[in-house]
Length: 83
Image (cartoon, rainbow, N blue to C red):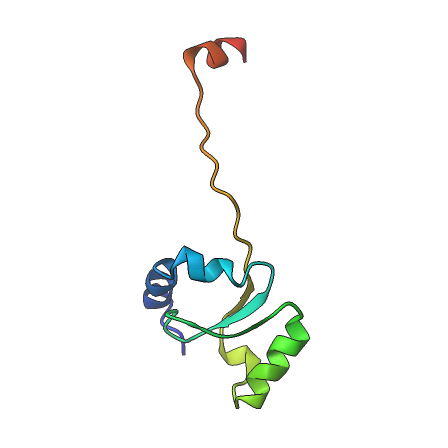
């Protein structure tokens, strides 16, 4: 069973550079959120990989990775006056 607070804490510390390797793929996370068990662009293939490892897909957290560019939004006084 996943302890969600510990999972989210660990997952948030997963290195961005490592996560970018999985961009656009489905990933299955370890119970503690420290690493990715398997990944594949096709969810069915990824789930088959889990089953081959002896892991039931419903027992792990699966998500699609979407790494986006960080965008800074700000408003100057002049921009605010025009709105």
